[in-house]
Amino acid sequence: MSLLLDTRLNGLAPHRRGKVRDSAFDHVLGTGIPDKGKVLSQLSAFWFDATTHIVPNHVLETDVGRYPPELGRHADILAGRSMIVRKTNPVPIECVARGYLAGSGWKDYLASGAVCGVPLPPGLRESDRLPEPIFTPATKETTGHDVNISEAEAARLVGAPLLERLKSLTMQLYAFGTAHAERCGILLADTKFEFGLTPDGTVLLIDEVMTPDSSRYWPRDLYNAGRPQVSFDKQYVRDYLEQIHWNKQPPVPSLPDEVVARTREKYREAFRRLVGRELE
Image 1 (cartoon, one colour):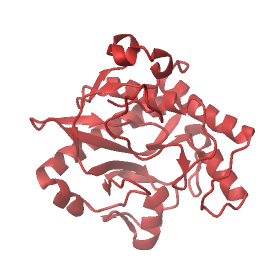
Image 2 (image 1 turned 90 degrees about the vertical axis):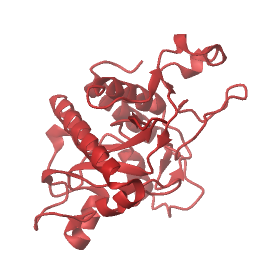
Image 3 (image 1 turned 30 degrees about the vertical axis):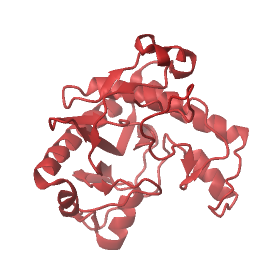
Image 4 (image 1 turned 180 degrees about the vertical axis):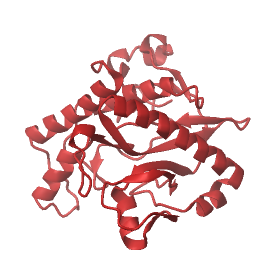
């Protein structure tokens, strides 16, 4: 069961909790971002439903009216920001698709001319669109940043046949996501997917899907290669923390109301554009 909540409900708790999402530079923020959990949950639900023709997923229920009684009585808390999912054995790698040169991929390219061992043409600029999307797996770290690895290293972790299956699914999902996002005036620069295995070996799409926290979304009308891009994520938070010269050590500063409000609206705008309706 995935609740996307930092709470316990009368003794109930998620079976597993991933890395904290209310964070920046790997530290928990001193101030929360309202509606962020709802955006992540509802946008994931949208993508899970839209991609079942590519791969099945772990979602069992998103309607709190159909939750078990022990959860249904908390409907006011869970509505719009939770889902009940099928438990799987998570595959121990992140499956990353990149269509643009940004983030850790840009740093890799500057150092080696390649990203996760995938050679790229010389002379590319930051944020350039790649000649074609690439698959760049990463480790799944319980704390801190995931670590980029080569396909060969990933194959040693999960086996070559499964890796080929995951790579194919990753690129199909990314192609579907980028096409939809572009119709909505958004560029999906890169994104990561997670997969799990059922006892009979079926591959399911799990976790969150193409959210602002697992993806790099850019407004298409503001795109200009050769520099970092405006994005639909915690950009205002990171910019503020850099502006005040925070040393990235605890305690994390509280955020001004303006930074919280602008960050909240970026998440809501991404949802509005991609889903075509307001957040519930």
